[in-house]
Length: 464
Ligand code: HEM
Image (cartoon, rainbow, N blue to C red):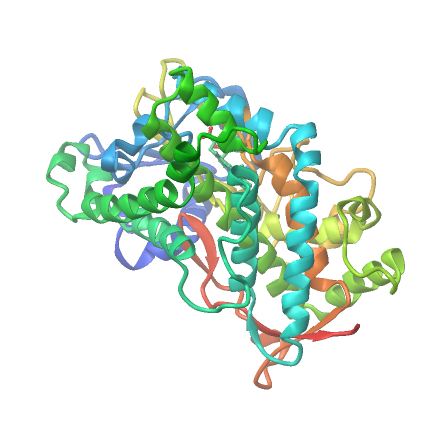
């Protein structure tokens, strides 16, 4: 373990902010897979960068690291007091939220009930892409629009939030992207918490403004109209939380904060994973050919659209998704904080209040676990021994682990492969403007989620 204020500043300020995961991975090569940055005057941050160290943090110290490290921006509008992402795991409200998500979004029964919603939107996505046949599209715009429609359908029975036919600004999409961008900016209050009340960089104020607009959108668009209507039989998540509100088990502001976090955590994560998969496939035409060949052979040419029951027949497609998540984990730095005595990492005791970031980006590229770690090789996820997100190997944990593991994993594990399969089924893809495969930019841009530095543009060609 090493202590250095300079390195701390390097990792958390200025030009390195957008490559924070890469800077920390490089520092781990020098200082080891469990490295500590900061001094007695700054907050200390321990960065965990290997599968063995990730196991130590997420499994062996699950209880002691069960809270999320809270950036100062999360305190804007007291968001943290009702946030599934930031509430302490000991808080009864956090447990109540997890029960709602597990019971009404990702349980086997609820996933089955929402299957037709995902299939319908995946079909519409394919139709829109086919309608753009021969013209370049920005892949992410269609993906995020589709994901937002599915999420709002599951939450509010509203699946017309984003019109895929209309390009350009959309309030929900834009606010979500803006929120993650603001929360990624370096903030002196996070390194020196005693300065937080001054909000020297104005980030809490910026975050508050953005958050207030998102609250207003969710309230006016979905929550208030339902409350005013008094209807309770939509069979969606809003029904469930309003029933708890009627029994005073949730406050009105808890409801808005809950839905805010579900959109923040559940939307871009899924759409970016599909975009990264498409970027890798366009960069590797041999893999594109293989995955499309599998779709043609297993689904035939007569089938119009992909259904979730088809996904079991597509092992190579699943391998592409997993290899994408290994190389481009959309949540590359999982932030936790030590909340009790007895936390120990690498033989060192970790004081209460210390931040711990698990660098999933570095873990996924650990050379001891992954031969040719920088290469896109979906084949490594084929066969009986292939790793899965639910497995016990900490070399592959794109959804995190322990009691704070992503509660949306079951939904994403169905939805992401369905979106990718629908994007590739009966649609050939090429690159615009004379671009060659090696011109596809795989550089990333860290803004809490791992975005593509250059938005992916490609040309769909319907084979119908
Ligand atoms: C490809 C898709 C997704 C990926 C890769 C992903 C990844 C993650 C990761 C790494 C974490 C942190 C886990 C930890 O601390 O150990 C997380 C947390 C979370 N995710 Fe996801 N996620 C995805 C989709 C979703 C979806 C669809 C939802 C919505 C239902 C969701 C809701 C959440 C929530 C609420 C948390 C915070 C959990 C807590 O702190 O208790 N995620 N996710």
